[in-house]
Image (cartoon, rainbow, N blue to C red; front, top):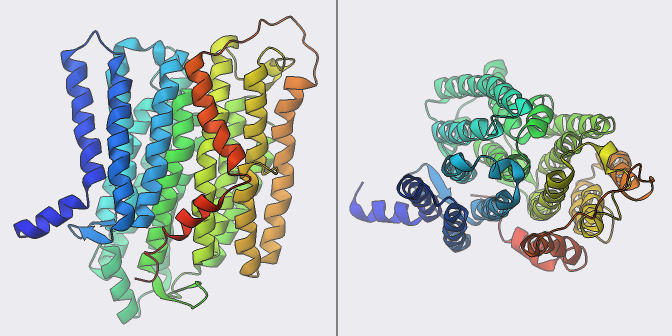
Length: 494
């Protein structure tokens, strides 16, 4: 590799390099200034803002770094989602009693978050199976530790252990699938594998089995059934900040990987109307539709019985993964636009719901739905904000969540998937019950004991408004998100 091509590759890796440098800076600062932990989140946010600038630059790029990573608008879109959610999570952490209680390990906490971010960035852009696997491991190892970060809480340790066991099995299965694909095609590069599949009559049970094993590893990251078993326990046991981070950023990276894996490896052509024609080795549409229906149905019905709000939101997150998977199953540019719009809105409404839960838990020391009885007047601003976020998650107009669901259903109907659209609609109706149940406890149930008003700092009010305003504004004026999503799917049809 000559100097010019090396320089070009490095130009395409600016966001990843920026996060790597930031990680080293945080580690060194923590080692040198051990008594000044309060500067760590400030350094992290400044570094992530700089990273965000490099991510925005990538919307205008289209090229490869070292033939392993692609720099394009599609990857940049997901990196922007990851960067924004990371900044919010670091801001959450400053107010989290769970993280404040671990003051002596603040350096490790922010270092591990940056490790997760680097892993997610690489996952969003990787086009080689070995790099994909290594990136998933980088993300996973950091998240395993963070899930059990609060050592004094027993459920944190339990969550971390379950996460490690399930994650180890999922990684092993995925690696086995990768080894089979390499054995059959002689390559780990997705584009090279596609060329082999185009020219040779590969397929049969062995290749299908290997493809499904890789899908299992990706499915674990995005919490789709039947790979979801870790999600409720980990989401309930982990610190709320990490739970929120996993529910948005990790899921975004996983979906970026899923779309790349399917559309690049099995790509054949694109119709004039934007529908993808995939190689007929695996019936991806049938498989994805089946998994999405299973995922959304299981997630919604399991959420009905939950008494812990974090656990309920975990099953809600599984259900939302089902909706997103259904948009991917359309196998069209319009379906992909629906995925990008959904994630843009999901970022604000899901992080907002977790942030309110965290602030209330800081005050009352509980996440149980029954402990929210009569809290409405005591948490006036927080209660209204939580109501808006939950209604948005349910897809209630005129919140932004309605727009997310609207574009999903438009994609399904245009693809003539009417029966599947009806199933998704019925699932949305089921979701209303468990979201409204929280609001019923907040406002319609009498207080058993008098509760002091829950105060909220000015900084947290601003942060909450930064999440709340987009949920309301994008429910009415959503053109910018739609335009950005449409301009970010240019990698299809390579």
